[in-house]
Image 1 (cartoon, rainbow over the protein chains, first blue to last red):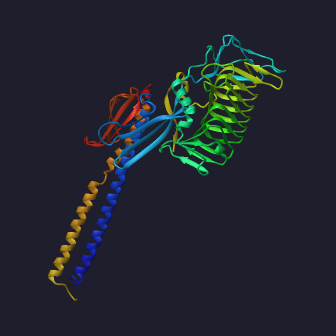
Image 2 (cartoon, each protein chain N blue to C red):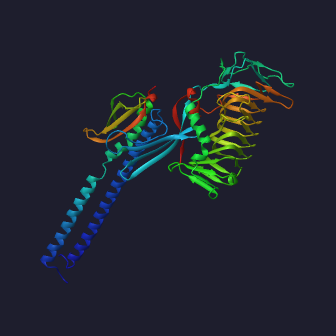
Image 3 (cartoon, helix red, strand yellow):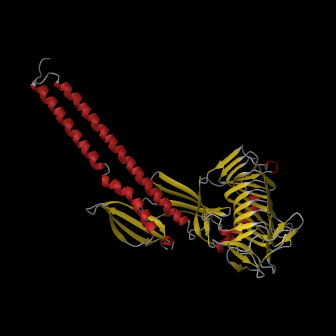
Length: 416
Length: 112
């Protein structure tokens, strides 16, 4: 017999059924939404990967910013901006679909064409002399007069093989450079006062600017050029018209410094591109992580010798570069301190001076070498200096400054 | 209350029937609208298949099967970028119904 409370029981049961069904509906809807979201995310990631391939192509010119439709009319809108960031290229990409957006910022650099080139010494009709515990490993481009073992201050060349690799004839001139990029860098330095948006003291203790934001140029006035204790990260260019001082407690990450003279004090560790018109001084035990760069570019009107002095026990990864347009009697000089290790490229359109036990894992190019001992200064001598090209990481990427020596672009690193 | 009237009983049974019917309808709708397992799998697998094809490095039109899913891949040149190809990968079930697809730009140099 059906009880009198059947109606109430059925109502309660119905409510339970409705609640269960509602829950199922909600779960199904959430699951579907998440799935759609995941699908959109995958598609945007695909589009970002595709636009990254476009950014790596030379056909997409540096300095261009454009909206692109990748495959068709729907769901493949991307934005790509490519510009120079010092000696490297910066690509800022965005892919969007409705309100969903994914973005990415990358530093691009070219692959080196010749992965064995260790040394290039201009032909000035005199040979390269090698002494002590020196080593040349890789292809050496030498003057026609060649290379010879020499006896310097009681020690001779300790090995029997002069070059562990092929030797080729060098030319009278240094390898060609990309004059377009060089001019752009030079213009940036010459016109630094005009391009600076602010002339001020440093705002607070830290300055962090994302690469997704517009470039931040800060022109420091003469009283505030000491960056001791400052934290500077990202899309920031620091300019000064006097000496810019970077201390051991300065934190720099991917920033650009431009000044006539930049002094990096002993013990500094960081990642920075430095552009100077007079000189760069690097103290002892400095560590510049890849991709870093030290460049001194001589003004056409300057009548002095531009130089880069690197102290003892330093570790530098990237490019060290000294250049003058027209060869002068006071040629640029790069001086490498004792037991300093350079991973990357050394280029001096002038002198390259090595102290004992310095090591280059990469490529060296110069008009003349210098070696200093306690008693004398020798020209075109390598004494206790090692140049080892195969020791450079196979993932090392160059710069478009050496356009003739490079192939297509690759991604150097991601940026925030 | 000692017993229920016939009207009460009919109302209770009707309410229960309507609730069940509604429940079944909602359940069916959710099951139909939610992703089928095979479609989900196609979505998850297509990225891996595309990467494998790029790694393999010979960029020609191809039809192939992987488990119970069929894939069709086509390539065409990307206008303005001679080094790039557009890879179009489509995934179908056993009856030929399209489940998913992706397009992406790949480097022709990878072919070498």
